Length: 578
Image (cartoon, rainbow, N blue to C red; front, side, top):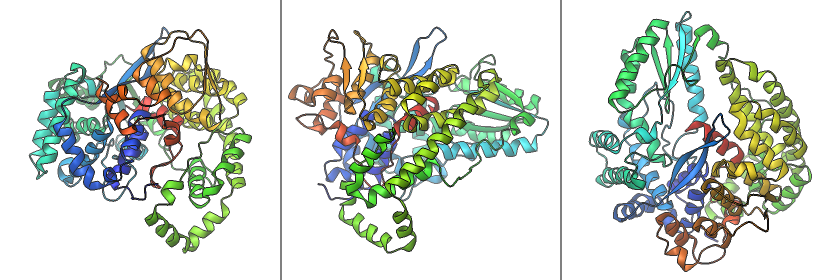
């Protein structure tokens, strides 16, 4: 047992990459088994030095679901996953940038990837949903001021892959040199950008690393500032999604100016004919003013997960009983092991301090296995009705009103994967598949309900993780009849093994011998530690020789401040938010 309390940066990196992909997260967990690597001092000094002196770039090209094409094929988004040391180094780099808010804080018109700071361990960036709510409120205010106007949505094509290394370097150097940023971090930023361009000779920044999201905001910063001040229409941006509000003429003129300005950066907006380009009246938009209204019922998903974590922290020996109780009721809610985090001495002291406070005692005493079961049963029934009601007639809605309804459907779909019975999921899956925006969710639902993962594997590693976690929680076996596997399918299959999900395969299925599959099934040997692929070599060395420990890592928490990860929610969200 390692009793050293992790530093802020280690926990931020853990929380952020847990939402991105299981491989970088596992690499971080194995890396941070080393007590020295857990400290902020290591993240700020040693990890950057290792990046600066390395001779190759440890990225893994994971294939994530992007969209289904009209002919039924799957388009994948290539996610370049950084190695664990780089993930820690970029956490330190971005922490350094928070010391210069005048340079790196988002302009008021930008609502995505706001840097975390201070003692908050929740992630490198603040939660995405807070930014979406703020943007929604800002658009509502602009609509109130333009009651006879229009709202126009558009977005930038292939945003990250279109950002050249030269453009990124110029933006980073210009901003870094404007402040008193330590030379270690100025050079680290340049090194990372250079290595992005060299990976598979892409010559652009990579989709995947957290530093890329920061660079995206940095590259558009001047445009954001200019547009928010000088355009005839109001301007708002969330990642690559741009929204304009004003009278029709002002919006059309503003859109033309933005196209010209982006073209100078080598970036392009989608055409007017694209379904991603939507224009509605401000009156029509304001019908959805309360779409993000924060209703707080007595029982909600947030209260269930909050009570679950509180129960686990205060009743370590009851974890097995809670797992069994959830399974007996047909729930697939992961019950993580907090033993190592709670037994860390400084946390025990804080816990004793909390116990002395009456509010904490009251809260903890009323949470029992039965109260958790009762909450889950209530949500199971409520969310099923809400989901079905929202699905009813959704296919006949115009694009804008479907755009309003789909986030709510995705909200309930992600949670039903943990709560609904197999029979209910089997019923809801074909209903959801009638809406193209829910095809990903429908396939995950079907796989979790039936155990058959043939269709799901083709979607990629994010879909696999979304299904594997609840299936592992339910102790359910997966089956596949596939005899040949594409790269995406083999990566996805490996994710099931990483999670410790038993997979029944046809006897004629060939033995899969990729390094990732070997790592997932067999663990690490000398050959894997000497791999020519730097990502696999690094993660193998952090793991160490021996049988795999991946499933155990995914069922335990690194620190008491690690978020209770619900991958059927996070991975489904990631597929739509890049």
